[in-house]
Amino acid sequence: MNRLEFIKAISSATLATGLPFPISAVNGQGMSTLDDYSAMARDDDFVIKDIDTFMLKKALFVSVELNNGSKGWAEAMPNDKRSSRTLIEKTLKDYFEGTNIFDVEKTWDHCIKSEYDLGPGGLLTYSISGIDCAIYDVMGKVVQKPVYELLGGKIRDSVEIYASFTRDVYPTPQQAAEKAKQLVEQGYKTLKFRMRWGLENQDPPNDNTVAFAGALREVIGPNIKLAMDANMGHTRERAIALGKELEAFDLAWWEEPTAPYDYEAIKAIVEQVDIPIVFGEHAYTVEQIQHLLTYGGSWAVNPDLLKCGGFTGGKRIGGYIAKKGVKLVAHNSRPSLSTVCMLHWVCATKMATLPQEFALREKAPGAFDCLKGFPEFKDGRLHISDRPGLGVEVDEEQVRAYDKKYTK
Ligand SMILES: [Mg+2]
Image (tube, rainbow, N blue to C red; front, side, top):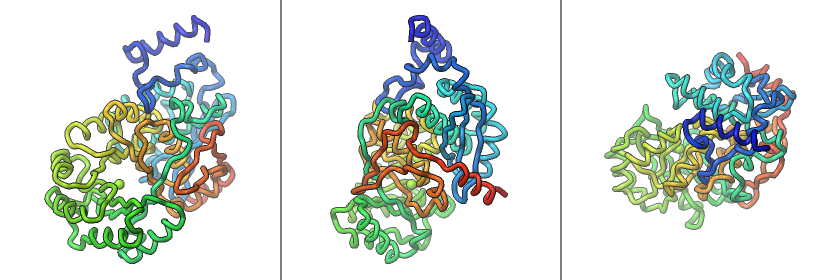
């Protein structure tokens, strides 16, 4: 970049943010990123021509195509994939189409702030995530670098992932224990079992959390780490009483024992239960993570890249928790493209030193048929590739075939 280009870049960043550098452009270490590419932000080749969405059985894939024909792929959070698709197609794509991919931070801010009434937690950030991550994929392909380089550079080559499984699928302690045995045989060194009670079913009369924890610990022995997830399932008093019972099972952490917005209850549980407590999967912005840590508390936080607006939101959270010294144990309920995105994020995020979530392939029927080059799983770890972008190839023909089948 020549001096004039450099000055222009600094000027535009200052105008956009009112600060001497774009504060939004911080990575997982709190350093600025994307500045090296500001000259490319004025090249028409890298302007977004088209954003498209594709329905799979349990996923919503998103593609971003540039004027020069390059294409990036990712997925949006599909909790309500039809609504996400509608929001992307009818509203969000208007913000991003016609913008340069190297201006992604500015466009992302413009979109989130303009549509604040639709979010900023939930459908808005769930949907923007798909666009943002696909932009990073194509950006990496354009500059011939893996996404982690665009996030500030990789700190680690591989990441321990934990197997995440649930009472919905394994409804008795015996069935869960049998599955746990298989997962350990496959090489997982950390397991998490989700009770899936939910806010609408707090303090259920049939609460058998202790029986599950006991059966799982017994079958995996003392050397495999075990976490439990209450999925917001208890009031403060019940969570404290249950937490005290769970102290006997040497849990690596206990996730969301109560409602994620009840900071007073969270604070009481953190103070009174002698198990590392984790919240954060329902905190969708860096400000919500800040509120959680300030008014509630959390041993580590578990934001989800697909819930917090993709890499742009993820970088901000990574930079914030690095300053606070709080670890990241990423939530990741989608096994295919989301896992690849999550891997780039945590490999470039300083505080991501804990095992990260993998929701098992069975949770994304068909999605793996569309991908080539999924990261290698070995010894309980996923190993990141150094291929450009996300480093996976998407079979567009297969994706289009699924879309035809599942679009209703
Ligand atoms: Mg959870």
